[in-house]
Length: 211
Image (cartoon, rainbow, N blue to C red; front, top):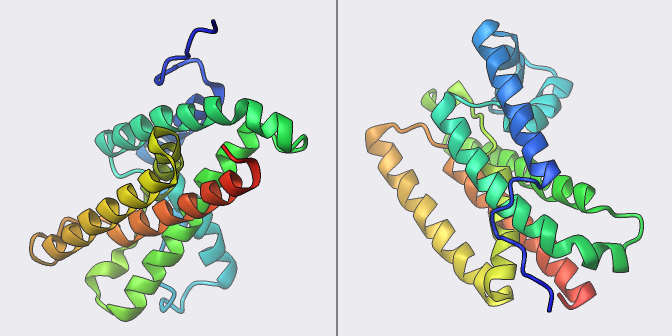
């Protein structure tokens, strides 16, 4: 009988590599303002920016963090759920998609969450044109949320993906309401967009592989 692998395995390389990258980038933000100056996601209506700058920020904002606490929370999500989907998908991907490695699958989920989260934030800013929100958005929370949705599938199937997604959406909408009064400056639309991006991908993979 094969021993089951631990849910939290610190030896999974790809999630650890991403966390290490977070740390290096955050240290660089403490030494120079260049990463923040050129990486923070900004509303599209800020016409002083070129299109290529917005596109770069759409990717890179997901690697920036406001402080060590922010980094630690996102890293915890990524290590736990990134490890879970990497281990669970290892044999599945090798059997069904010879050209798609587990590491590539991890990056697809994470970056899809970051991009979808950024687009969701842009949409929110468009419908809520406020100077307050023009300060921008950073953080890997949307990418972590995408990994969370993928991990949900392995915790209880497609039903759990939708149940957790509903709870996640409601929770972040509540945060959004509170944000109007306490000014927490949390990119809650990005959290929602990131989760559902991961959910769409993992449900599609599930249909193709019967995982």
